[in-house]
Image (tube, rainbow, N blue to C red):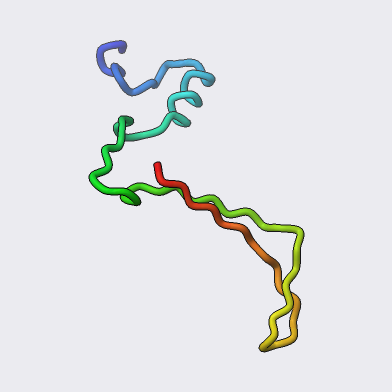
Length: 70
């Protein structure tokens, strides 16, 4: 049985199975940028501030978006 189930996690503990299922897939490594701005990270958060749309006269939610060159 061990030979048939090798690499399939058939008989592992539930904790082990969950840990492997939640692990990132693919190759992890470093990024090498050839030029500035090739790789960026964006983060957006909603603010507790409202803005008045002059065209419609309605109050709108606002968001702040930050961009970082990595």
